[in-house]
Length: 556
Image (cartoon, rainbow, N blue to C red; front, side):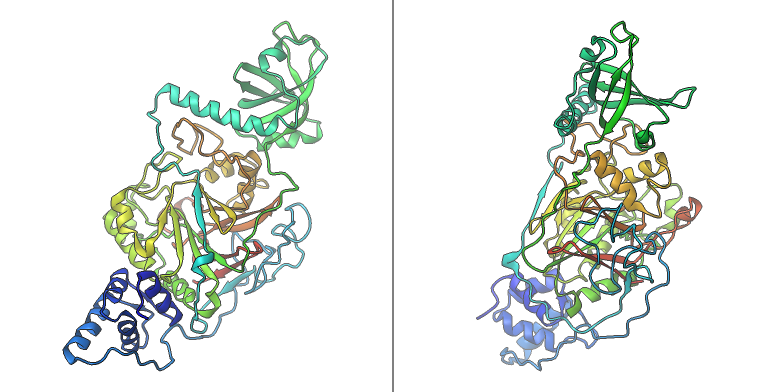
């Protein structure tokens, strides 16, 4: 029976260890006898080819037409896909990973599904640590026998601002987005404390106990070394004092302006006369419940999590990307059916000072065309989803809508899907929060090194999970766009939190949520060297969707 659709053509090609240009698939699907044309194209492919080009298919079809030969397929049973090769040893140390990250060398992660960063085996524990840093160095194993189950696949997107943006930058827009943020995050806290509005608290008699849910409008230290926090709700503001000798005083160092918290405490004796204060006895964050249990897929299927490809840069690692794409065609990667890219597909233009001196491609559209060519190297049967980053040709302010139609057309390879930044992508029942990660710069700059650092970017991600907001602080390093609703709030707990941006590799579990920063595909640029950024490049975290275990593979 002839192959009737491009999807079936792609599936048949991948089963033989090949990929093909989109135009090549179209030519094969339009042939008089598509299955025979496909077999002929494969039989006549160059020995070292993994991808069939449109030119190659055209030549094969022309040869068949000129010779009048029958197009009955003749198969040798041999594919010319990736061949097995030696696997090089894993590096003795990988910066930004840590010596104990809960991943077996070349196999699945050993992280327990219920592991907490504060106890048991996991990314911040020395138990069952991989002595080589838990990263598998990959060449090209045996040829693929990919047989994806298209009927079992599902990929849905939520929280995408694309086509929904209403902000005009007027004052009312800012009021609207902050009211929406407060409403949603305070709702997550009110079940834990019996909070009163600040206007009501101001009129209560002194000495009583109460609770406030508010947005942090100011944090400052007193002359005595205590901490004064101004909390604001829709009725006003109220001062809350955290004494430096309280057990939880260290939590103040984790606070950011504009995040929503709850406090419980005792009112000063002079409360009610306009000079009152709340002496804080406990502090609460929206947070991820410690009892949270993530969802998993019903079958063994994997997703590759990558970000920061930066095509167009002189430092783009084309060979490493091609090695990664080659590996995806091998039997070892048969279960990898999804590719999720967390922003910065290209290097962009004018992103930082003197960037033009470090560009290999100076035209932004040509950068995306080149990226599209590299995307063609991955198997055509993969489901691909991409969100933009700060180097991409979209607005810088978050939430970022997906690309415009012209760029979508350029990046339409393999019917790749495009969503906004951030978006929650549900892949076969697993909720993956995709966020490029610009706010990580702010978190790392504001918090102590043991709470957030570039060498351990997943710890900064823990802070965002704790605050249930991907970019809580307004007016700092992260540009935020006012909308009718706050697209950056985490209403629901994700099963996986995937970011990029900082070009550092790191992962771990926070209250059973897997946080992954996937590194980059760009070697150190002159600008990065000037600001002391040492990137982790050429890595691909491979996530088992049925267990949420993870393997990190190195291709550089």
